[in-house]
Amino acid sequence: MKLVSLAPSNTEIIYSLGLQDCLEATTSLCDYPEEAREKKSIGGWTSGIDFEKIREMEPDIVVTSD
Image (tube, rainbow, N blue to C red; front, top):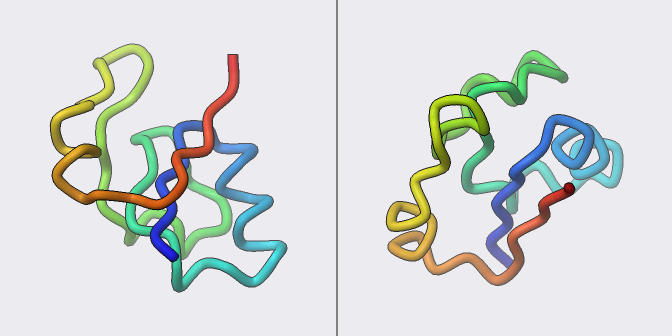
């Protein structure tokens, strides 16, 4: 399973569930846990999300928030 997280809270939940190996990319704001910084970045809400990059990754699930 391939995951992409578009919010820091979602990234933390993914790590808490032990699914970090499935996490392909996060936003530039996802910095906890520290290991999350090593994941690919697809941008951020203030700098813009690179939706084309997300499509190219072909994730199974994109986790977001509003």
